[in-house]
Length: 136
Image (cartoon, rainbow, N blue to C red; front, side, top):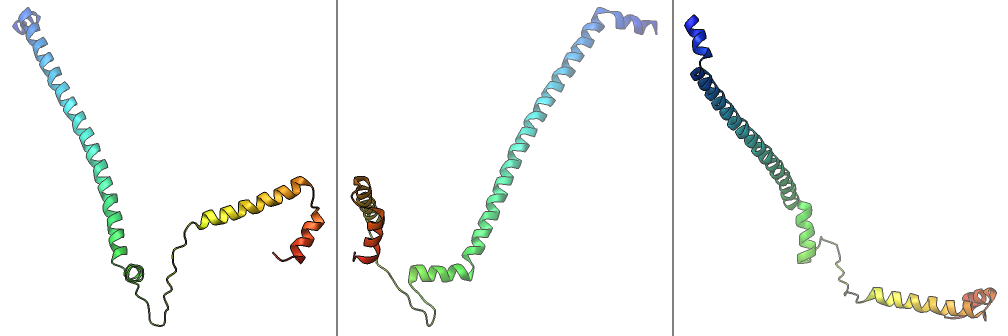
């Protein structure tokens, strides 16, 4: 037993124990780093799985819509011009620049009324009389 205590107090034993301690610390650091990287990879892959699950659900909903009778009927009406029995299809020509015409007409009306009021030549009662009793 005395020999064991002498061995522990020797410089060689101290150096050996220090070496073993450094080796254990190094291995522990490597394992902790690998655990951290593995955990971050798992989180990244889990978020990817969640994204793909959401995308799959959206695609399944779209597939159900595309396979429905409502969608087939709608597409047949819009693209092929089909109709139900007793139904009439009316195709209107496209109207060009409707917004500009209405906008210009509205501007010309507001400009003329602004000029009349601002000049002070026409009274309010006269404007009402003209509105109800003159042809426009």
